[in-house]
Each structure stands twice: as C-alpha cells, then as structure tokens.
Image (cartoon, rainbow, N blue to C red; front, top):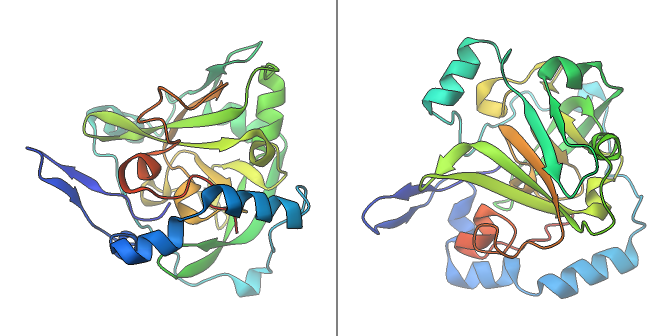
Amino acid sequence: MIGRRALLGGGAGLLLAGCDRVAAIPAARRILFAGEDMHRGLHRALTDRAALAPEFTPSQMSPIFRANGTRDPGTPAYAAMVAGRFADWRLAVGGLVARPLSLSLTDLRSLPNRTQITRHDCVEGWSAIGQWTGPMLGNVLKAAGVRDAARYIVFTCADLYGGAPYYESIDLIDAFHPQTILAWAMNGRPLDVAHGAPVRLRVERQLGYKHAKYLMRIDAVASLAGIGRGKGGFWEDNVDYDWYAGI
C-alpha cells in the first residue's frame, strides 16, 4: 500500500509522507483525482471486465520493493499477534453474507491459492514488480455467500488513524476479478510486517493505495454511506483520492 498519513493531534492536520507529496499539491490533486465517474465509466467501457493486469517473469521482479506507508500498526493488539506468529489472528468475513466466516491464517493457506507476479503502481510515479500468493477474494466471498443486496466489499485493517481502523473498499466487479487475492506471501515468503502481515489485499487493476494491508475484517455492504466519511476509504475521505483507481 502506498504512503498513508499520520494523523496529528490537536487539530494539527495531516502529516504528508511517501506517495502523498504529489497529491498534496492542490493543482496536481485536481488533475490526478478529478472526474472519477468519467474515469470509471470510460475504463470499464473500453476494457473487458475480466481482462488481466500484465504478469511478469521471475527475472523481471524488482530487487527492492518499497514498504511505503504504515510499516507497523504499532498497537498492543497487533504486537501480540506478531509475537504469536499470528496463530490467534482471524479474518472475519461478514456483512451482507449468508454464512459469516472466521478464517485463520492456516485456513487461508489451505484454500486453492493463486501466485502472480504483477506491478505495483503508486500515484507518485514509482512502481515495483513482486510476486504474491493467496486465495482469490472471489472464492472466499462465494464461500460466505454474498447476498444480492451487496454492492461493495469493505476492508478493515489493524492500523489505527485518529483512533479508527484504516479501511478501503472496492466494488463486486473488482472483488471477483481473478487477480484480486488475499495475499499472505510475497516473493515466496510469508508477508513481513512492513508489507502487511499476515494478509493484505492485492487488487491488481487498481493503484497501490487500494491494496489494503493488515487485514482484519471483510464486509459486504449495500452502500458506503455511514462508513468513515462515506467516500469509500481513508485516503478518499481525507484527501479526496479517487475512489476508483483503475489502471
């Protein structure tokens, strides 16, 4: 996930970091994030919904893959999970589903997994190619039985901002895309803390800030209203990032 903001106390605002320097410039932000509906509509009109993001060979993998943004949630609860090697971690799958799930890391690893080598693109302009392994999100949602009323999938994370968990969201089209996975491994090894352990989202046809790290909950919802500030994600709520970040 690309650089997040550390919320300062006393109304001091947001401290810029990492990939957010460009988006912090008002003129640049207007160019980068204007016309969300047009962008989404044109992207989907011109692109097959099932089209795959480019995949690469092991020889093309980047020697260094940045760990931007949160490198450690830093909470006592997360520290305890790390100390226990995530044995007590559970991923809750709920909301508008017929069969709520509570999945351990072992459960996820035992599911049919997909391995893909893809490029992570940051809004600041840098990119890196890495290998990711994990079950397809769509298969997990099918096991939970997403109800007809659901329109979006919301991801709640272990890291806190202003006392509230970080969150992101995607629609069902991207949720059921075959390259959208719940990655527990990177470059052939279990995720480390800096890259989002124990599990992070990989939604390969969207920009890096949509790839939520430190996953704790997945909820199917009918609307994004009432979640955070209603724009679909922490960045979207606080700095007007485009909710649909398709590439």
